[in-house]
Image (tube, rainbow, N blue to C red):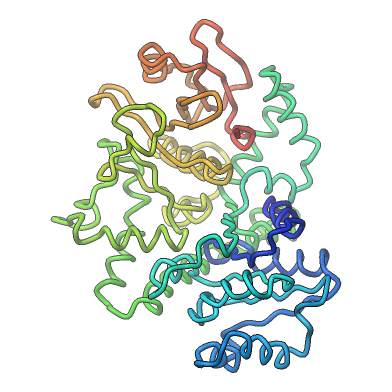
Length: 436
């Protein structure tokens, strides 16, 4: 399946600075598949090693031998000249050897004719907890996410509809009513399926029939995450806190307080008890964090309140699985109170895929803007509606107070622009178009 990160990898390949690359992302988002495809299609010679299976390579890099000697033995062990033009080495599960991660600096400085790309399970967690820091400036980092709605549309053979959606987005002119309904239907399908490639593949293999597809895939992926909490954390108490925190996220999406509350994890829960759990989940790419800002000015990062934030599950399919929602209730739009929370989570993930950091604004509990985007046009406020509700009290209040170039309302309504209020009307299926 086509993935956006592929073009980023092409740029890395063509860059004169031939530093090693590391691809980070949540488990099961398709890292190994896309890297293998990239290596096979873009290089003449490709060798792959998995450090879970190659203890000899792990032991080599744990030894005290000089870097030059390790490199020589690596080539001999692999039986390939890594310095030969058109050759690439893919190191999977590199988190198994911290010493080899550190050695990437040597490859960048002394062996930069060799092309090396790496990935691993929970690699973000490993990088954050290494005894020595990652060699900054010597390694190119790529973030990979579950498939977004645009990638889902590519996979389900809806490219022509995508092109029309983008044309209408650029012109802010309504798309044909039948196409609008089709796109809304596909958006709801994506809410059910989510962005995990294995689940999307199963959906396609079963002719996009929800009844025939294997409904255990998302459950299995979710259980893999729970197993990681137990296997990767030595302290059982810490493991339990991470699991408690993760499982509480879906139920907190609709908090009236508009923020994540530690006391909702368990009665009497405090930040000092669960902050590390949130940090672990973020490093594992299992959650996305949106921070409240005290003042919507540039730079937003400078005005964020680190103690007030929302958490989102990083895949909409996993979220709905955790909530136990039946597919037909999403497809038939039977949800009521929780629909808004799920929709906001979807939009958050789409923005993350487009490279945005997440922020929101609140005015003393009387108004809230769901997202603030830092763009070339300044700070742009975004309000999310789960249906065709046209009321935008909070967004209008924000626009009157801070006078942005425009605001965005995302809903099930067709494209449009309200000149009086300066609000762009963007359908939920077109969020992928909102980029800088």
